[in-house]
Image (cartoon, rainbow, N blue to C red; front, top):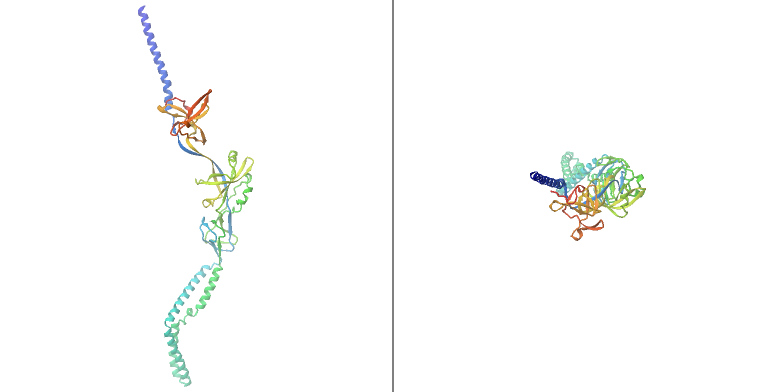
Amino acid sequence: MAIENKRKKKFGKKKAKIFLVIIIMVYLVFRIIPTLHASKLETYTATKGEIEIVKEFDGIVFKNETVYKATANGQITFFANEGDRIGVNHKIAEISLNDDLEQKKEELKEIETEIENLQDNNISKNIFEEDINKNQEYIDSLIIEIQKSILKEDYKRVSEIRKILDERLDKQSTMTGENTYNAASIDLLEQRREKLLEEISTSNIEYISEKSGVISYDIDNLEMVYVPQKLGELYPKNFNKIDKDVMKQFSGKKVNSGEQIYKIIDNYEWFLAIKIIDEEVIDSLDEENHVYIRLDDSGEELKAKIYKINKENSQAVLILSLNKKLYDFYQMRYTPVQIILNRYEGLKIPSKSIVEKYGIKGVYIKGAGGITKFRGINVLGSDKDYTIVEEREGYNNSIIKTTNNGETVNIVALAIYDEIIVNGGKVKEGEIIN
């Protein structure tokens, strides 16, 4: 009996040990599983950053454009490049009226060269003036002798002297240059030159700029449609984009009278009309304020003044005024417009890491020893992926007070370089992350 009792007591102790081991294993399992789960969680370091709240709309460019037309038929030549910024009194174009203009210019060049050569010959003639005078005196003496021989009826002598006279006359003509057509025609050549100059000058029509701006030879026939003077009448119901039909002009082209040949665009002020159907965006905008925009995926940020908001029911046409950079966008008629509605700076965190505890928003971070801790945040702005929260500096500013079941709770705020649990909803405070 005693032996049996001893066996029962021994078995009871063994059973108790097994039960204790089971309890310990269960405890370890419940402690290890969250740790294993938490060890696989993605983290993100809180650093300073910026996000923009951007909305994209369709825009129409309105410019002050003056189109100039040909006043005659002819061949056009341009003296300014596409996109040049020109001032007043700049020669832009010239129309040649005559097909033989180049021929006349060539003839004028030849005549001027001939006149120059003849003038050089006259200089040479002056150098030999003494020889010319002596030869002329001899010619005069021969003529007198011929006259005397004729009175004496000595015709044989007349014939002899006549041969000598002809030689002397030829020599005199050679020295003076009077035996050539050109030498005798300097006056005629000068008269011809003056006539050619007059014909050439009246064969060209010049086009001189009367205003400054950007020059363009691309004309789309919408220059008088999208004019700033019509912006006051532009509402969502008549906000229409008309198909463009661009005509390009170039030097050497034959043009007809009345044909559009170039335009000058005022680059001092230009406008963007944007149709907005988002009431929240409309309500956030006020006339006379400024907004920042980007055009045509250029990436360049432009500051624009809100010139006017033409509201119609729940929609509106936003009209922006700009006074810079037209020379980068002068060919633009239609463009996507990105409006930067807000820009936030602070600590940048993933939006999906945000959770709520004690009635305030916050995130879980990986603290000392890998233990998760809750940190409070003050949200400044968000987009679909990231949120900017206020960066608090100093210990006194890092405490967020809240109430939990009637008791005041001090929550430490998120700090720069805290390691945030990206999927905050999958952890609890106090879990261990390896």
